[in-house]
Image (cartoon, rainbow, N blue to C red; front, side):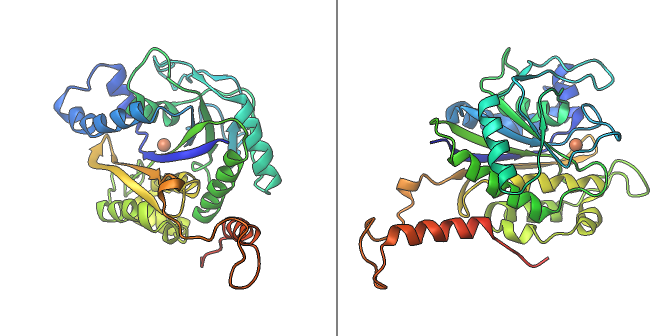
Length: 320
Ligand SMILES: [Fe+2]
């Protein structure tokens, strides 16, 4: 059975990609940013996932205003880097995992999340910059990556709550895939930033740090943040942070925070990053009666527990 072992969030600032491509990572301004990801690369090298599911947004590279899918899952065998105006980034072609992606599409759509299936797509900095931050700059990316593009560019983006619930559905899909794969889910974008208008340059570190706290320990609280609140507190482009909730919904309720990094600024954006691990179930020390043993109520424990688990994750509802 496939399982999700951890979740990672990271900003995907395009200037970070330019700094890598132009050899500026050792310059003092950029070293401050990149040094925050040294431990992350070590963690990823040890985690060695078989597959990464990466939630990101396209920046008018693969999609334009002519076609705006809310959720688009990359099911192709490969995804070349997009030309974002300066030629494609000099990064490896992203290899997909068509079988797992097709399985996720089927499971999630039958769970009533209407994904767009994408069989041909180029990927921009939104996807490739976080790969660099977590894997460095190898000749080939070390594992397949399934892109999940989310519309956070044209109103209306999906709600925070919808994103969290999609994460739940993705976890269910992964856990029903028969092959024994270790999966890491990455949620990218943010943190606070606004790139145009009278509030251009806005950074709200207080909001960002509270968001990092809650993404680890109280994600349901974040599902109640409205679009207007995101824009008011984190700037117009701060809405990208809804994508972190797809990652978080795919993890267990309680997780282990293994690393966090926050710095301001990179270009005009606050950079936030966190690594959360699912606690291995054997180590979770859950007190429960042996399978099949009669409970106090006289019923077998196994079906009741399984049913409770499914209801919990299929019907979480929060105040909005
Ligand atoms: Fe972005």
